[in-house]
Image (tube, rainbow, N blue to C red; front, side, top):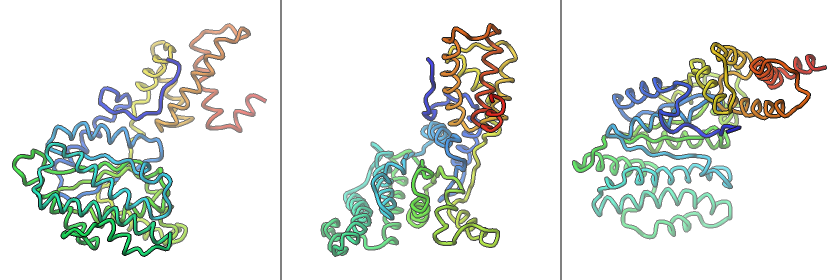
Length: 351
């Protein structure tokens, strides 16, 4: 193998950065906490939020918990302003049913209420499209509702209906799950204003018993999304930004990038690339990473892939200097790190 992919890890066997203890602590907290609860996994893009959520889901699936996963960016593609939130709400409802599987044990009355819930979520998006096109929004919604006797007409009814459905499922003795955990990923990949709108909708609609939300989002994304409301963040108005975030998130959790086992990760990945290391060299490679690209997993993977390519070129270069292979590779690794993180210094070194 000459490269590594940028896919998140899915199981504990892939946990080279040793974040499992954080996943275990979070899963224990989730199982013992009161509901409703919203947990915010905070970290810059590529810091490992999705991987941590996968590890959490793996631990929770065998603990009387129904888990539903939603990638928000899939619901934002090719949609305009304010169209993402209705799509996300409807997506969460569908994912909830999928998560229950055979334990979707609703009677006919509850099933009709469920259909009304899904129709209303879809009607929200239909109303937005109708408004844009200059169509009668009420007529558009009525068409989606289809004349059901259990039509939902506002957000309060929607929230109450969802709460009732989830409570029925959990109270059913045939079902073994006692709470529902929603994993909402990639909020930092969508338009920040849309991300903030989604957060507000989740707070207003899904802040109900038995539900826990894990949101992968960074505080800086929230700040950008709120600038249209509060203006650019300053010392004078920073409290307003923080108050909004605190209102949505009851438990903020910062990605523990500083405690990642970089030595273990590097040794494994470099070995996969066919680059052997002498005993004790792992620490030197790890120090290069620490003082150049840092511990962001996505940046680190790009760094390793670039190094793999340059090292292949070096091996093919017949004019390469005759030095010890390990010294050459460490030097090349360090120079590449300087080039990526300190381009001005690199230009001075190579001038």
